[in-house]
Amino acid sequence: PPCESTTHSAMSRPEHVAPPEIFYNDSEAKKYARNSRMMEIQERLTERALELLHLPDDGVPKLLLDIGCGSGMSGETLTAHGHEWFGTDISAAMLEVARDDREVEGDLAHSDMGQGLPLRQ
Image 1 (spheres, one colour):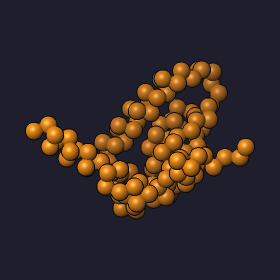
Image 2 (cartoon, rainbow, N blue to C red):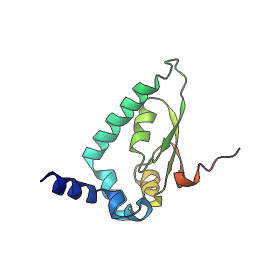
Image 3 (cartoon, rainbow, N blue to C red):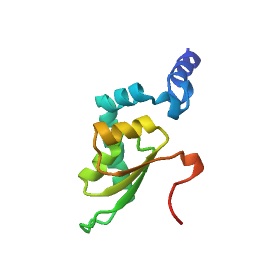
Image 4 (tube, one colour):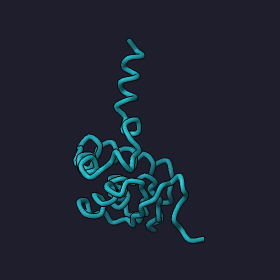
């Protein structure tokens, strides 16, 4: 029945299991970052986001914000396109994977977007 599969898929979503700062612990963060399917999806989504931004093709790198950057997969695509980026995520474990395992080039901040960005005014 449709309700059963909908319920099953909804319950298997990470955000339905635990808050992200708890769900994405060290082992889950590393598993996510090694998932080739996730890498492919993130790359395609980032490519599409860049298309939708209609950034000028003037050879000047743009500074982009990646909210919920996780392990930095999207940031790698941004870097490959010559852009600089700043990423923020609620999961310290995901940011650790981005910094240590993936060695991404963007600047990273541990932050809960529900509390706003940790930027100077």
